[in-house]
Length: 358
Ligand SMILES: O=C(O)C(=O)C[C@]1(C(=O)O)C=C[C@@H](O)C=C1
Image 1: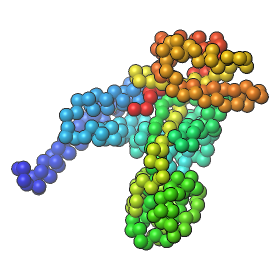
Image 2 (image 1 turned 45 degrees about the horizontal axis):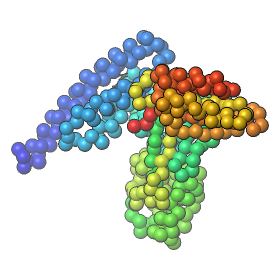
Image 3 (image 1 turned 120 degrees about the vertical axis):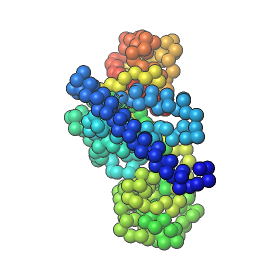
Image 4 (image 1 turned 135 degrees about the horizontal axis):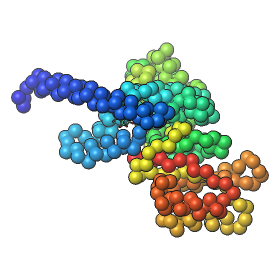
C-alpha cells in the first residue's frame, strides 16, 4: 500500500471515522461529568483549567510522533472547548471589538465553542462578570513594549472578582486584503496603534500607498470586504473571521511583542502545582515600609514575578501595590508569607491564585 495514494486516503477515512466515534464516546463521559459537577455545586465553574492542563501534559509526555507535540495543545483546546459546551454554555466577556488580540487570547484559553461577548470597556468586562451575565472576563494587563494597563489594575481596587487565569498572546500584525494580491492595493487602513507598530515596514515596502486610521482593526477588515483595493493591518484571527487573504504576514517592527491578559471570574480555579498568586496591598507611610513588606517573600523562598504601584485614589500620596508571586495560596510557604505581610500593611487583598501560563 506504501505507494498508493487512494489506499492511504481510504485508511485515513477509516481512522477519522474511528476518531469521530471515540469523540462521541468521550462526549458521553463529559456530559456525565457536567451533571455531577452541577449536582455538587449548582453554581460551579464548569471550566476546569487544572484538568485541561493535566490532560495536555500527559499526552505531550507520552507522544512518540510523528504527530507533532505542538499540535496536541490546539487540537485538545478545541476538543475540550466543544466538550465543555455540552456541559453548559461558557459565556466569556472581553474587551472588543472582534478579531482583536484580546479576542485571540480568549480563543487560546476557551476555544471556539465558547459564547463570546465583546464589550466596549474594561469596566464593562468587570461588570458583565460581577452581574453573572458572563462566567468569565478577559482583560489586558500588560504589554512588553507599552507596559502595564493601569485601567485594569485600578478596577481591582473596587471589585471583588478573582483572577482565574492568565494568557500570553503574541501581538503580530498582518497585511490583509480580499484578493491577497499586493499590486491591487491603493489604500491601507487600520487602528492607529497597529499602524504605529508597523511604521517602518510600511515606509520601506509600501511608501506610496496612503494609510488611513479607523476605529479598530476589525473595521479595517470590513472595509477590505467592501473594496478590493483596500488592505487592512490586522490579526490572523481577522483574516479567518472576515475571510481575507494574507498579503504579508508579521509586518510589525518589533518581532517580540506580547500582551498578557487576565481571566476574571467570581470563583477560584483548582490548584495545579504550577500556580501564581496576585496580591493587592497598601503600606504605612514610613521609612523602609516597602523593604519591610517584601522581606517575608524572600524569607519564605518565594520569588516575586512582578510589582506595580498605583495611587490609591482614596488619600493623597497613598499607594496601592500589586504583587505577583510564584505559588498557590493553599501552599504553606505562601500562606505564611501572606500572614506575615498582612501584619505590615494597612490593607491587603488576595486577587487570586491561578495556573501560570504554560
Ligand atoms: O474533566 C472535566 O472536569 C471536564 O469537564 C471534561 C473536560 C474534557 O473535555 O476533558 C472538559 C472541560 C474542562 O475544562 C476539563 C475537561
